Length: 168
Image (tube, rainbow, N blue to C red):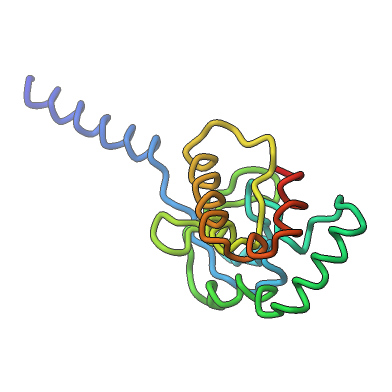
């Protein structure tokens, strides 16, 4: 009787643990449209998402006229920054995804490091203001601080750095 109870408990625990810890979502990259818009194929279904919690330089629109002109000059000076995500995501390769909200996801590129963190470290994105107190928000802010300290991307230009500072 005790042996049967032990077996039932083990079966219950294995079933419960597999329910709580769901299998990760794996998506195959089918296209990278912009630094912040990626198309995936998940189990035969097309899915397009944006990186959760960041705004890339291409998407920043609410800047003063002087700042918008400086941003355009920066983008013309460094055109390869527009293809940053394409260099880090390879087509037809699987990546681990965390789907956060409606059309938003976290794409894990280098182990636990996400594509959004890489964009922030390169100085090509800013953290959206209402970031929740989560480990993801902490990682995002840490990556942004590193970009500021190393003066990479938009932080290399003093005028643009001051403009973006107003968004944060």
